Image (cartoon, rainbow over all chains, first blue to last red):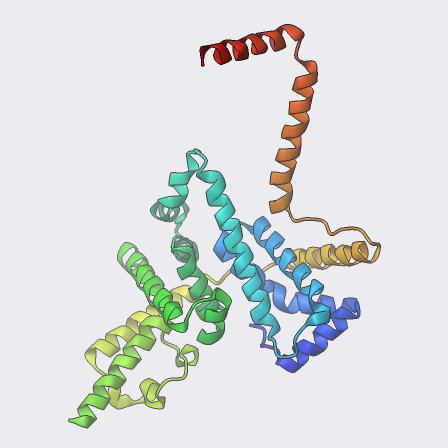
Length: 189
Length: 139
């Protein structure tokens, strides 16, 4: 896991990017893109869309480089933009699907189907399917706090919710995962 | 009595931490310093919660989020470098796919509408006009 940068070094990087320093851009992309991409994939379940979202987030960051506030934390800002863009993508999907296509039911009731269709003998695939079958906000919370080891305050800020709401999502998500994984496949560890 | 209550509170906090954040206290937020490490806070329920949390954590560790490979990272760097070149040349930014597709569909619909209007034979247009007249007369 990449170490979080200090706010001071974030300001330095943004100043370089504002001056058009391509090496600073490359370093920033290499540092933040992997986790941004992981979060977007978890929310959207689509690698191409996840990549598009990350690209848009970086474009927006370049656009505000000159006005970057020294007190802001880069990773939180980027994560929050990625999260918001992903939510917008999901809303657009639902809008298109709500216009009478058969896929609406597949998405709405897809959790059990996803688990059954994508489960394989590989434990990782089973666990991944169970995570992807969670409601979007629960799997976002678990990805941020558990897999990306983000603090609860920062994760709540990314999702624009209170810490209490975040903890509710985490405990409900973990409970669902326990119910899914412990009951259905007792041979998993 | 107060020691029992403190111990019970500590057990409860510990269970909540386990159920919410998992078994590793490094993921826990700042709580009472005793909640994670107080051996006296152990109970049957807490031990069960710890075992379940450890089991779930082990499973979650097997399924981390996807990580982009080197090729995808380079593609991102290249795409954003092209954005910079485009900006410095004074052109507008290319738009990601999730904006292009609906806009393209609208443009195609407009072009088709103009094409159909130009190509339809007069008889078809006359039929359409007579149908419109019929409905207007019947109102």
